[in-house]
Amino acid sequence: MLSMSIVTVVRNNETTIADCISSVAGQSLPPFEHIIIDGKSTDGTLSEIKKHQHSAVKLVSESDKGIYDAMNKGILLATGDIIGILNSDDIYAHSQVLENVTKLFQESCADALFADLVYVKSDNVNQVVRYYSGAGFTPEKFAWGWMPPHPTFFVRREIYERYGLFATDYRISADYELMARFMARHRVNYLYMSDVIVRMRTGGVSTRNLKSNWILNREILRACTDNGIDTNIFKVYSKYFRKVSQLFARPA
Image (cartoon, rainbow, N blue to C red; front, side, top):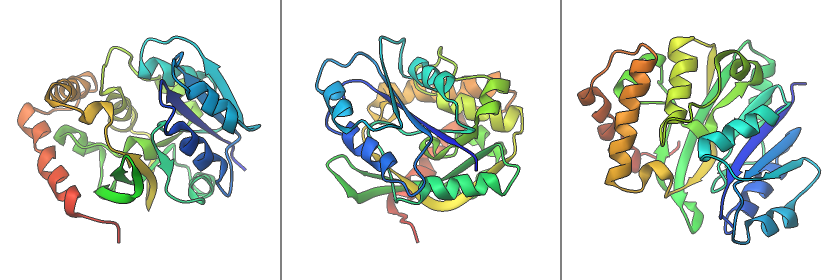
């Protein structure tokens, strides 16, 4: 059986980190390790982690150079065959997520896998506000500002070793650049799993304000250029039409 490593990055998030840890621990096939990289939190985050810590949790608390630097630290520490990243605000949608993901990797030659997620209210994870499906995605759609939902993205560790980690000179869109590099530039084999596997609380870095969105879109253009994807600003901004439809769509 393939082994699984989950990486979670956190800083000053005492209100939701326990939900994240419990979500991973409650899986029908728990991961081989849950690596938590804490950026020297100054609130009660570390206390919450230690309160809910179990044998699979590996905790590192030290200063970092930002969220993507912290993610890279977690990936480099990971020893599982497959690596997934779960944000400290987020939870898995049900208890069979990691078991189903592992089985699909086991039964295929896929290097990567992605699925669907729902955005939920920050104070009520059962209230869905947006449905983000990976259905229909192909690498050609990076040019149109579209990427698979990153919290649902699982990758074989050897792919990180072969093609690199998150580019830390990106402020918001290093996840976009990494997936474009893996899937469009290097054409890794991938699978789409038709299932909502993550509940993502609203309020992430890339969705906070107009300035963040301006940086996001400039970085998407740069990511496409860096990975040989032909695009333009009009193509990238067309993604907002799709995002509007996601507000009204719901999982079947």
